[in-house]
Structures are given as structure tokens and as C-alpha cells.
Length: 287
Image (cartoon, rainbow, N blue to C red):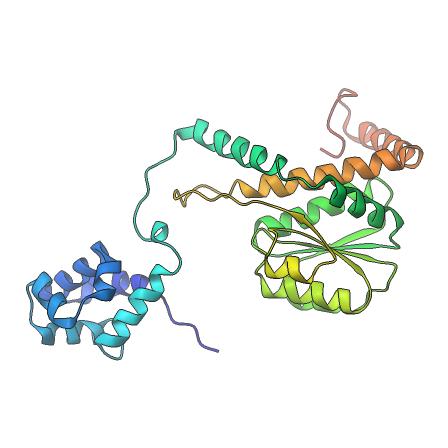
């Protein structure tokens, strides 16, 4: 399978090599990609103040077969969203970062399904082992986070983020296992396929992902997320905090359901860590 560099990147890359008339065409396209993708070759020529032959030469200069191919690729570039092409206003500095996190947490708190949480806790409590998968940036970290939350409570848990390994692990499950799949989008093929494989082999599959997504559709139980993205693309997504909050809820509910086991486990961890690092007795457990 071959992948083409998107046309906006190609035009930007080739810009210094273009003739002056071709540069006018390039600037016209970059200024309004949506309009350019709809315009005829004649309209593009008039707007740029060049000949139709120049439009054709420009298309070939940016590695398109012809003007029609150029317009198709311009339209495709819009599919990722205008926010990745034109600059959006900046957030309100540091306050904007914190406000974004607070807003997404409040939004997701309103949609928490407590019945689904109880069901998930019940399955995790009885599992022979818990297998957690997540890929990409946030979901990889959150998969590891769930592993770190649960092992200290005394549960057998492991996390995976390699696509091939996830499929292998999913193929090795039994009916006594719980498979937790994390995805902020619910569309990552490797995560969806791994969850589907695990369910096929009898594991209970819990998805932490937006409801109605492909991942949610193959899961036995979905703990729904509501993602909220802004037009300011330079800020890391605040939606990952909603996923982290759900993981904290699961870990806390599990701990409360196994207080005696968990208390002894946490005490041992605390003693070991304090003997190693020193400090006060109110330091976070596990740093």
C-alpha cells in the first residue's frame, strides 16, 4: 500500500521551485482550499491572473496527474478539517488549558453510567487476568495507567500497545479473562479488531470509548466518553483526562470492594517505597 503526501504539504514543499505565475496559483489555492476545489480551471486561471495552461503546469508541478486530480486532492485535504489548514485563534493562555480540562471533565461526569461502572467492576473483580490495550498517544499511556492502578491493588493485569501483539494476546484469552480496550476515537482498526478477537474467544470485553463507535459496537460493555476538540490544534487533547477519570473511578470502586486485600497490598508498597526514598507519609503512592 502506498501513501501520498497530502496536497497542502506538497504545495508548501514545492513552493520555492515554482515559477512566479505558479506561485500565484499556489497562494490562491492555499488561501481558500474549499473554493479552489470547487472552481473550474477557467475560474482558477482568472482568479490567479494566469493562463489555463499555467494551471495545468502547476498541477503537474505538485505531482498531480492533471487539474482534476489536483481538485480531488484539495477536496480530500479538507476532510481532516479546516482547523488543520487555517490558523485558529489562540486559547486564553494557561487559563485556557485548565478551562478546557475542567470543561471536558464536567461534560463527561454528566454522562457516567453508574450501572455500567458496577458491571465493569464486577467483571474485573472476578477476572483471572485483565488485559488492557491502547494505541497511539493518549490511549497507550492510559492503558499503562490502568495497569499501574490495578497491579498495586493485587490484580493480575498487563497492558499492550503493539498492534500485532494485541492481536496475539486477544487470541490467547479465555472466558475467565477481561479484555479492556481504550480509544478516544473508537476507530483505530488494531484496537477494534483485537477487541473483536478477544470477544470471539470468550473474554468479556470492556471498551472505554465514545458510544456508537466501531469499538463500542464490538464490546460487551462500553463506558462511554464524550470527546471535545477545539479548533486550536496545538493544544494536546483534554479528552484524555476524561478517560483517566474513568480509570480512577474503576480503580477506586475495585479497591472499595476488596478493602482488606487492597489495604494490605498498599501498606506493603508504602513501606517499601518510604524505606527507599524517604520523605513524609503523605507522598503519592508510587510517585
